[in-house]
Image (cartoon, rainbow, N blue to C red; front, side):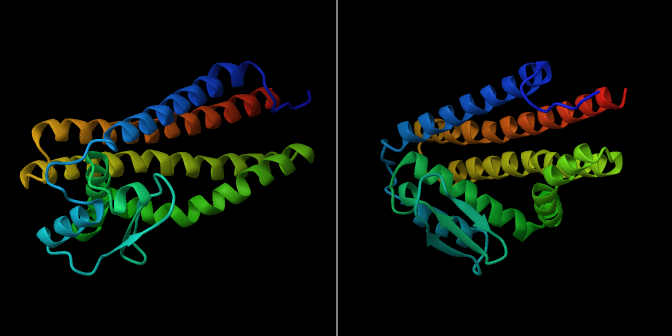
Amino acid sequence: MGYYYGIDYTYLVLVLPALLIALIAQIRVKSAFSRYSRERSVSGLTGAETARRILEANGIRDVRIEHISGDLTDHYDPTEKVIRLSDSVYGAQTVAAIGVAAHETGHAIQYDVGYAPIHIRSAIIPATRIGSMLSWPLLILGLIFNFQALVWAGILLFSLMTLFQLVTLPVEFNASARAMRILDGRGMLTREELQGARKVLTAAALTYVAALLVSLAQLLRLLLLFGRRRS
């Protein structure tokens, strides 16, 4: 029996719904961020000032804060110990900017306190990169030459990316929870503003849930198609 990895019932039933959920999640996070990027915070803090205050309050003095171009490109780089904040966050005095800056600073705190899931995620990143480069070539070669070991090797490498998405969930949810506690405890946002920041961070967290669903759907599809081929 020939092998086919195009649009069939497994794609329509598994992958397409997951992709639609991911698209909705992306639309929601952009909508929430856009809305609360128009609301100036009472505190007048910028994203960069927020990050610096939180770092100092937690005794972290070896992490830099830098500007990076783009939208929603904010991230913490543990290898260089730098929080990079985007155009709409670094110098912005908005509820969205403060929430996002606090979230990224939450990642710096996670490393500082030895939060286990983020170290696990960092440890599997090299394997995940290998998986992203080699999984599909191995799958294709295995199918072309009818070599089952290569196909299973490709599926195994692809599963590493699914594992990465799974480990990412507690890391992101924990960083957001830390951010909300800090913003509330230190009075950086009012009660009303906290609700807005929570909506932004919750919408962002859902994009990671959607990414996991897409990865799981693709992995399950591979297993179903390969199982069908063997039969």
